Length: 228
Ligand code: DX5
Ligand code: ZN
Image (cartoon, rainbow, N blue to C red):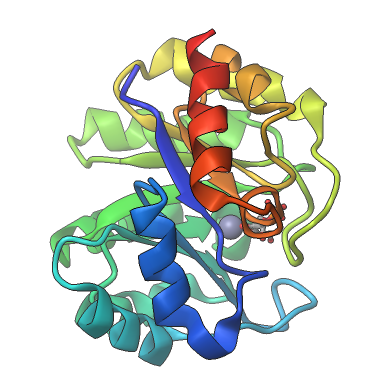
């Protein structure tokens, strides 16, 4: 399994000072900055788009891992814009595309543009179609870097973690020992070990980090929980 990566979601950060918030999070030990893009259509909430990612890239420098999670209805139309903006990774929802074959094409397009590709599923989506996308990609040597299992309904930070999603995590991990398996939603010190044991190595955590008193201590405790 790839190394543990802590990916704070900045959804509940001070958005008026986003770049300094991201700098503080990296200084506190974050590996990845998880940027939640919402369009008010695929999910009932609205956040920001590629211009914000572009500004962050300028502020954070070339080495920052900017992981864009697109909760939007037509992810394909934004691939080039996010590449230009400087996104490191582009994760789209399987529910937002026509089906498995289109998803495979989109993964390929993301890779061709030079970004890491991720595919996400919402809690009500079974893991089978995601595995099918991954199998087809593998067969055609198209790299899928990130398989994202949502552990809340996408749209808002601060919701309750759905532990029953762990069987999806394990199913992906069993077949793909090298891939990043990411969990997103309601994860914190109290349940990160469950996620890690199930096979997730890329851990998105918003409120658990942002609302804590000491971000560095929280991130360190999260890592320790996985080592226990
Ligand atoms: C939900 C987002 C998540 C979420 C994480 O739609 O994709 O990234 O904001 O926040 P917490 O950890 O607070 O659930
Ligand atoms: Zn997210």
